[in-house]
Image (cartoon, rainbow, N blue to C red):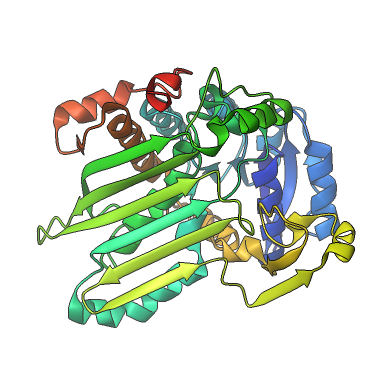
Length: 414
């Protein structure tokens, strides 16, 4: 039996990470790449890792004709256009078995709804890639605590965080192209994770009903003159003119539709975590029990002194977003597996083979987009957003944050 073949649209940071993740997935090859830049390099990287012999295609249409499923790993601002090209390819006869889209599904609720509508035109299964829900540590605690939860009741509070020193590419920093700042970029992870771990074991991922959202956004490190200058030089983005938040925190209240029990999910995210690299932190608290995940608690640490530091040329080979070449450093031997990338690919492929959506589909991605945009709305207005209010739900469908509009100074400098 031949391997299931994937085609990647986009060849940037996340595409490379997903390519590395394929090392841990059986029976799946990266067979094609389409990207405006970096496609040849990604194809060569895949061949080096032994995860396929991908061809570089000149169009989305050609890619779709030659793979079993396509994954959209291109920048946020290009998603609608690329999805339309996938739809056109399917209508022209491309025999795809599924479509994958990396988080976030849309920069606004309107964009996420449009992605869902386009996907429906293909009648194909979809998978929304939110890797943190697939982390083995998160899945293990669910299994381990299932009997405790049955006896004591589900978790009632969660805390989730993703923090690092900032993105790799300029468009991530540009709120008009990315859709905001760290809230759009990373709070989508933390919000999804918080909702997931609070959900009673065995229930659907959207079982708990979101009731309200409180949030704050701020520009802390990257709003200072020194760092604004650094950002402009490195990324070509001027936070003196079009700033985005580098810090976001909030609280979402959920309700169990059967019991009426409320639960709370806190999220905190920043682009100013100048420690030993990226940190994912998740914590759940229930009646008489708890769990905690911290990806910086690695079983391996190394030390590099000043005299040896010049030999450490690629610090990110040890840990994503690492900012140090010396001292006591964390090493994560297999980040792609640790962060859930391997498992999310396995899930998508297994379900596509059956003609089913992935564990998380585009409709779920839309719900996460709504929560992220409600958090922007809450921070912008300085109010708790009532998600049970039909008027609010209607407002969210056309809402675009001031930060995403390039008017972040009105929020972040007030």
